Length: 118
Image 1 (cartoon, rainbow, N blue to C red):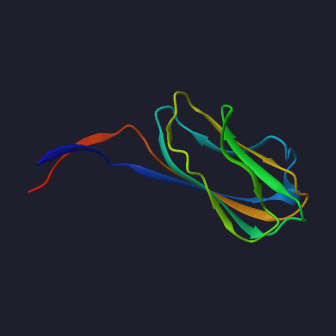
Image 2 (tube, rainbow, N blue to C red; image 1 turned 30 degrees about the horizontal axis):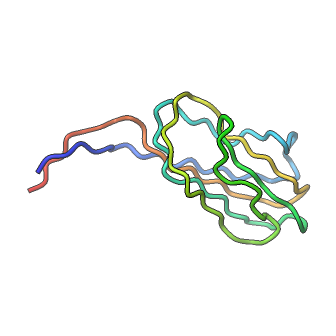
């Protein structure tokens, strides 16, 4: 059996200290290239922010995580899978003045090979 498979996977990991962000309402997180197949975006709360603090992660107007609680030490995952039509920046909107989060983005670039299985 033969099938085409994506063979180059990328994982972008960014740790953000919310107390050091100059623009919490429009923070740049990572660049994502045109054609990327985004499989997973997660936000892990390393150091909780003050009570009622929330975060939203979006790309070109599409929200991957919206209004997630960052006042509790936990991990949030996006259920949205998408193919990007243009290169752009994953943005974050954070309401907390302190705390630390880790954002992970797992994606494939358009790089197919023909795999043969016996």
